[in-house]
Image (tube, rainbow, N blue to C red; front, side):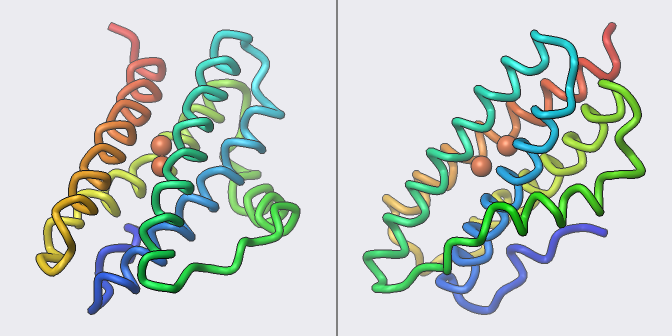
Length: 149
Ligand SMILES: [Fe+2]
Ligand SMILES: [Fe+2]
């Protein structure tokens, strides 16, 4: 199912959902990194996880200017949720890459929708467009490694 992030009626609610999605993505990365065997894959995924941590910092800063935020989730809870939802798809390293490509499909869709929120300040739009560049890079990497030419 496609993500619902970006279907919220207000930009603040959208930003909150984006932040939740980022925490979700980090939970998925931590789990995937703990399972993947190929060292090159592991290193690359750690670097993508760092991008997501930066995005969390950016979004938290934006939300702080609105005097709001989201409750930082318990990572153990996120990991357990991920293990349950990703368990069946994780068969070997390629299975992990496939599951992560799905995670990144959602991050791409969610960030692409930022243009619908025209009331956001330009500086916020710019930050979101930079995050989208990272998310596209992540998805492309997973897809390229799943389907090498
Ligand atoms: Fe991200
Ligand atoms: Fe990503």
